[in-house]
Length: 339
Ligand code: PHE
Image (cartoon, rainbow, N blue to C red; front, side, top):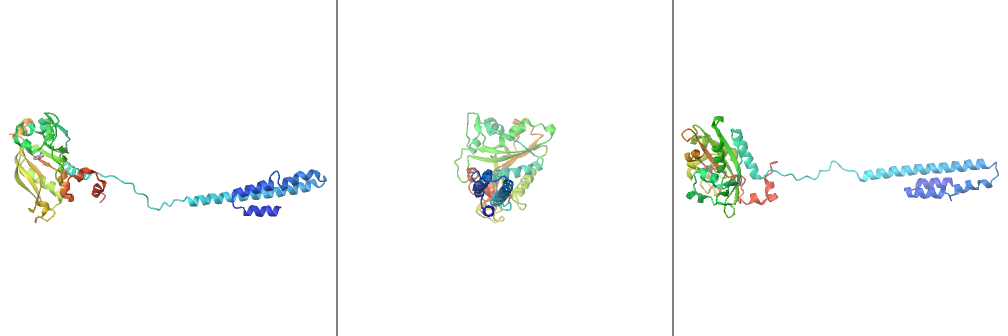
């Protein structure tokens, strides 16, 4: 019985089998219990011998059971560990990371450049008063140049700003010249009643620039814009200025950058002129200074207004402005700063 049980225990392959054996061999109805129970029928002098023998067999079997059970438990745990093992060297699942919008990237670059030149960055309201968007910029109610910018009016005197130039007016009005010259840029959204197409969007961006001090000349303006063109479009870029008209600057200029698609030779991007039109600028009109409470006999300055949308289109060869506002991740991901 012992030999049999021990070999059965050894070969048992799971804990359930072990348990069956235990119940069968050591249980109440098992052979060993039976032997022990049958002892009372034995002569008294044989009882200790038989008893201790039966007990010994029972102990051995019981120990074998415990041992085998432990073995199985350990094997089971090892097996489980093996199956659930994690290979930490496997490549992870990448987490998608966002990034600044391409227009934000262009604006950031412009801000960095001008902050480095001692300008402050000023914010202004998108819902603006006619007073600041037009009047203070030398555009009275009946001025024909108001038609240059189709306007979303909210009431008679409240509108969606059509340009960032009202921030000029607001800042000039507040500036204390005893604290030094005024040098500011103001990036932001502007709105015009245009029908959206590849080159028009009812909402787009502008960055306004303004410097007011004593003895500011057009050469300062040109030098500043040259820096800007080189910083944004490459060291080799040149600029040229053509006479133009804005009610709030006199003289006014349209500023072109030498074409970086065809090395100045002429191609479709520059309409075969070798120059790309990029921004408007000029010397601040005396009327604008006067209205802001600044004496044009003492102070003067320059202003410029550029479009980051247009800059980004030129820089990255985007040929539809609407792409910037569709928020198609496949489009936006192309401007990852990770390179
Ligand atoms: N505000 C002008 C526009 O939107 C641009 C500009 C700004 C021109 C400042 C000259 C000086 O067209």
